[in-house]
Length: 244
Image 1 (cartoon, rainbow, N blue to C red):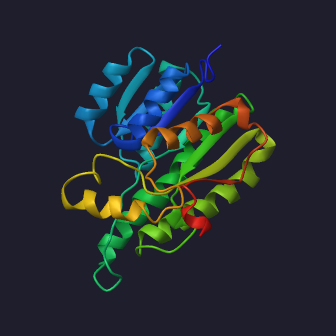
Image 2 (cartoon, rainbow, N blue to C red; image 1 turned 120 degrees about the horizontal axis):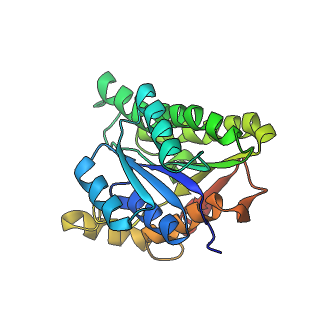
């Protein structure tokens, strides 16, 4: 039997990047995957490519009503939710002196508030089977400092994960966070950015960037029953960067 056979999984920010890689790996492992994103064109194209066990829903992760609709459509199509991957997020590389209140609230809403809304929305569905796994994608900047706003939100995801893990343990629901380092996505491996990133990779203990699939393998582990005794924990995928 496949590792995620018939598990029903919601993945946010799944139209491209790491979210798309998570979706592909979960489908290959036997799951039924609901992909959500604001990019309807790319999201629907990926769901079509992945076949009948994939469903795309256009979704604003900062909307409570949107989350309610996603859970209802998921249950109608595939059944109760077994796994949530809170993957959607944005980055911001501005100085604190240059960040407006509007900028700040936008990144907090997308990176932090959406995680709260997602957990709150799926827990009742997971309680029906007294089991479930919530996987919150944070960052190494949820462990060490970085850009204002982004770092704040990723530290918050780490804290929310622990609080939710304690609250959900009596229902058999596990909640963990994943902390990727620098990932070789198409967005950063182009133009002038590519040279900067490749130079930075030499400072990482393993001397290379992570491939998206390496983060997705961690997500698959946490989605599966192999991680049945892990909750409230941080899973770091950074090649030793934060160990220095």
